[in-house]
Length: 274
Image (cartoon, rainbow, N blue to C red):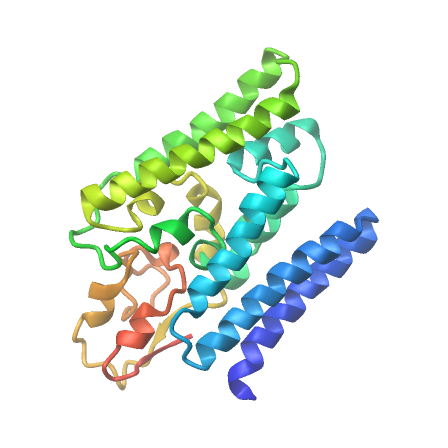
């Protein structure tokens, strides 16, 4: 049962969040929402523990499609970063604000960039493209994501300043258009740079929220230096250009690890673990 220990702990964490929000906000939706996400994550990790090859992709689609189609399209909630600014400016503690607080601001203290590896509905498509291992060194284009971050804040701020009517409807259409743009840009960059995760590295604005807490993440890849032979294979296969063999929190691109465990699977000496 030891291999199921972490999936159970993670499920309990999400269940605690689900019950707390349900009772605090008197809204049964939060009980369902976080129970569903926590259960999907726990099942996915359990499948991975049993060496099911597509475990992570199962979780990506189970959570990603739920958030994209059910929450975003059918329920009309903008779960992109614009939705976070929207509810924040309204002074309402619900929907995207809670999502970002749990998954992208405080959550990374526990599971780092796990959101990007297991729940992002943009990445669930990008990970299906053929360039799973970056063909080139990481480019110095990371500043672009901060421009997109600032642009999203400016966009929503201007909508409020201009008192645009039917703002809720505008946010819904911005969610649809924004997702379409993300997919188009993400796929184009993947083929241009021969790197499935190029969008995540250079464009995605959510990184601005994820990076600070991810530095202190409790769950992270560690290297048993007694077993390691410094072959460098883990670094070569990492989709985010992290150096997993370095145990320092200051390691190269350390806050970018999405916990895909590709390095763990490919390590010839099995020196990598969580």
